[in-house]
Image (cartoon, rainbow, N blue to C red):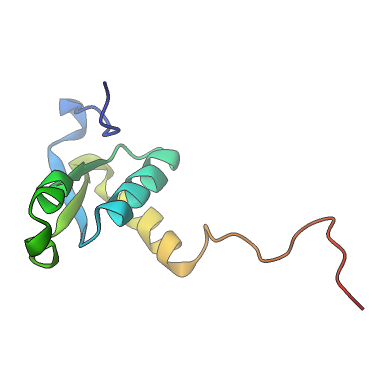
Length: 98
């Protein structure tokens, strides 16, 4: 069974932390976005947060990428935070009331 993390490739360098968040759900969403953009990514420490829920606010979840893809990952993260991946509120084919 796969945990969803990208496989380690020594050619790409060691894993580096791109961002830390305090929600495993947010970390998984960011990992998926990075992977969809072609950047290998992994989530670390999410199970630790789930195991110690009383300390969840003090345990960050790390989103990691290979060292040689860090610049690309930062660009994807900036584009995400800027809203480039947001969905439009317009619904094609839907009529607006008069």
